[in-house]
Image (cartoon, rainbow, N blue to C red):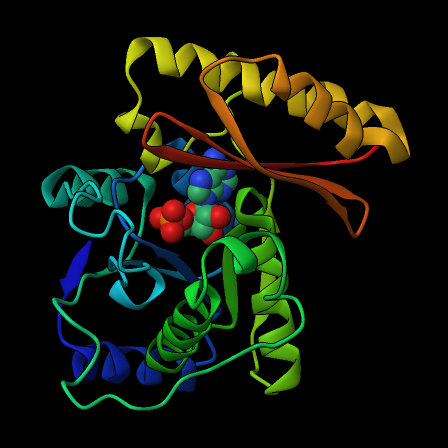
Amino acid sequence: VKVIASPAALQRQAAQWLRSGRRIGLVPTMGALHAGHLELVHRAKNECDRVIVTIYVNPTQFGPKEDLARYPRQRRKDLALCRQAGADIVFAPANLYLPDHSTWVEETDRSTGREGASRPGHFRGVATIVLKLLLLARPTHAYFGRKDGQQLEVIQRLVRDLNVPVKIVPVPTVRDRDGLALSSRNRYLSPEERLLAGTFAQLVHFAASKGRSAATVLRHDLKKLRGVQLDYAEISGGRLYAAVRIGTTRLIDNERVR
Ligand code: AMP
């Protein structure tokens, strides 16, 4: 695996691959890689000739009171995992914003409500960095997890509206044995909190089987679960979306309503 830190170097390599007609798969991540991220890499390996994994903790998608400073960073381990998974390039820049950066990408429909309501400015940061990464890596395919379901919707809309020539590939959520969706943030949880997080995932799964009452059922069940504070439970586009806080850790999940 080749590690690239310079945006210009990535752009040169990507342009060369594109000229030779290669299918290029992009897997954008913030690092602290786990089996969920690696599933995206495996999908990209299967469908593309070259795979680029990006590791960049994007500061512009964090709110002023969020966990940017404590977000887990494990460069060496991440590189080893990317190598094992067969990535061709790991793009790990130190910084992707000039001091006087002043251009933002704002999606104004799918970004409202749910995460958009709880995390003002979050999707503006996400849309901006994703478009920057797409222009740097020029992938034919880009891989995103269903776990961040609203983010996926925002990116699909961004690519459609701005005519970005890339195929966005959604990848199903990878879960732990008790059902908790794998997340870099799960490591913030104490053993007791980790148990509650598993129960949260199980309640989402159960509520999603309740059809149109899914959100009501989930709200009701979570009220009885001490130590878990509900942020929202909502159905959108046939999926049940939920966010909770357990201690200082914020967790999100979503499942298709059935
Ligand atoms: P992050 O590093 O949290 O920004 O996530 C990078 C990408 O991995 C995003 O497209 C996420 O949706 C995806 N991802 C994170 N966790 C999972 C998971 N448990 N299953 C599938 N995809 C995931």
